[in-house]
Image (tube, rainbow, N blue to C red; front, side):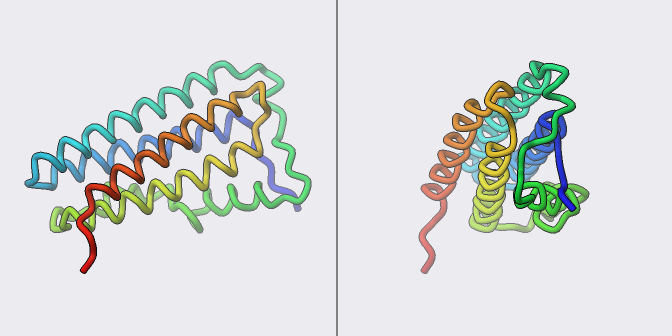
Length: 163
């Protein structure tokens, strides 16, 4: 059985990922006593908010046929991956990353979690890119993927070396 998503649904999932990122970074910033780390985390939250707005705009620009047309995925692999994400097997959308923070995490733990979340986002967007039509903003995904890679670089630079 093939699992299909239309571009509208895919962009809605992307918006949720970005909202989760905003919440995670802002909560992590609230939970750290390091002012430099808090500033960096708030800057990352602002970037994720920009990504959410980009996806919202891309979704709003979809033509009616793009909203209804299912993604072309003859082997069903991309659809299965996205479906697994939605069901919580890869990302659990019912658990927001910010809600996992207790306030007792070290900055290293926060950064490690953030790097993992950024990697997951990149994987989602790469898969998404193969499933949305060019006219539905496929090219703009490269910009977001590049920014997410930049976030990993920023987080990695801030993370103290492991002993």
